Length: 363
Image 1 (cartoon, helix red, strand yellow):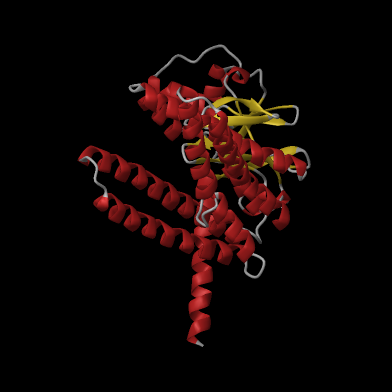
Image 2 (cartoon, one colour):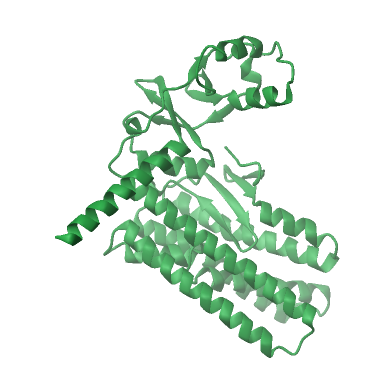
């Protein structure tokens, strides 16, 4: 279920490719200045090839990526973490930076043999972009590839949560050093104030990107840790109604008046669809309900088994950028998982764990 903030722009090797909203904004902003737009085009191509290396390596290791999201500073190849062994994870993580470094070195070689002019300038730009992508993504900081390599290495001797906590701490230290180093470097530059402000703005964007990525990784690790012993059945919400795909919207609306739920699902084969979002918007706009079937307005949602691990469902929500998952028991709809309910359950388990630690420390 692609996010509207990260629209799908195509497929590569059967994997959806999405463009993150920050990249879209940068490309739109670059339209005001042709050289800047050319830079964005080269950056897009370099990031795309970087992520393509991750996809190919994942497929060669028997793992099918869910989708690829392109960011200005790199990308994210979304995969099922349960399928990735540590060694395969290492190969997948380093393949992107190695590809960028290879492209950078190839550009350097071509510069030597290229005629002076636009071609040489383009190759020089590709060299700089790919070397920065390659070296930068090898830094041991989340959400960069180097951060995942560091976490996988630490995880050989520590728990996944502890390994993530250590890797996040390293990320924060590097971010602070990066900001301080930038400030000192800009202070010594013999450039215009506008140029210095531009450099600071770009570096602050990078620092925020690292901080946000590290925070998200730690949150995800906590959720997986505190749901590791729970099953989907422990968090299932049975407050929903199931209708036929041919049910019209006006009939559905009158049916909803008699129940205490806004979650409406219908099923076609093994796929499950959610239709309540359209109804909520119709009521807000006071729009007339149509004599059309709900199947015209459904959105497919992921499906999990009743006895599967809850941590697996959390990862599924993350990969599909959704806050709802349908739950099946013996091939029949048994309920739904909602993001807010899982968050509450995790918070409760974290509180209980902290209380036990404090009581244990008191003895």
